[in-house]
Length: 176
Ligand code: 2AM
Image (cartoon, rainbow, N blue to C red; front, side, top):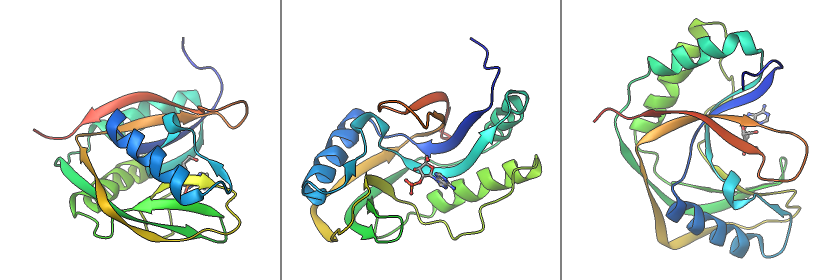
């Protein structure tokens, strides 16, 4: 069905089922009953958040994404932590592999060229594991979660209703 109303959109890396299971397990353990865990089907790493996008701009967005070239890479998710202000428990790689900021940068450039204002804050790649965590902790994973990244996706987000809240609309593969 063609969308007729604005959609809340973002670009993301979307975990495969094994990575998703590992992240969900880590979220349960690290949150230790505090806050609201992200639904396992909603776990992701945001690349670029677009916000509300009118349906007539969707084609521009997907065309911009289609111009992005990137190399496949592996994310080694090896630590977790907590940001007190957004009250978010997250997981991230201690070392960000260069293809990730390269992908983020190219995607932002392509989107800026068609009028989407680039994010001013520094890019801090992370996966939100739980929200509304009033007192969190940080730690290192004895066994890092290895995530082979072969594609990025465009996701639409519902702000109301039960999770899962996110829906993958389209995927773009890495260069082979
Ligand atoms: P977060 O996980 O750190 O909250 C969908 O909302 C995704 O886009 C979330 O992963 C969220 O990051 C991210 N995001 C980035 N900027 C956002 C913004 N201004 N408002 C809402 N979500 C944002």
